[in-house]
Amino acid sequence: MITEINNIRLSKHFKLSEFLNLRKYPENIPSMQDVVNLTYGCHLLLEPARVVAGPIIINSGFRNPEVNQKVGGVRTSQHLLGQAADIRPQDPSQFWNLIEFLKICEHTDQLLTGNGWLHISWNPLAPPRHYVRVGYYK
Ligand SMILES: [Zn+2]
Image (cartoon, rainbow, N blue to C red; front, side):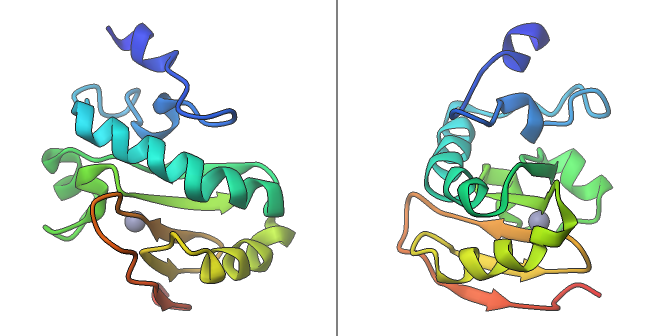
């Protein structure tokens, strides 16, 4: 089961396993809708972002309620739905390029940035809010 999940590719450069952190949280299994949501984010945001800023590291993607609670996520977190990822560019010098791209990307729902990483969200079920807060996380 875990092996199969690890081999699922959501888009050309992103695998489902990158969004689950199963080594640390083996119970963090997404639903079909969660996977559809993650796939949407990969195709409309993360792949285009990768073209601009190079390879992207996913720190946190999908979280089931237990994982979300453990990491101190808010109860309404889009991570619970596979609609968000905390990311950073593999090349730190691309950080602002990545932010600038996601700021203007038409599919960005929420963009919150911290020191060297950022939270990006999307929602295939509603129009994007384009809510951007640079420096939201200290
Ligand atoms: Zn986040």
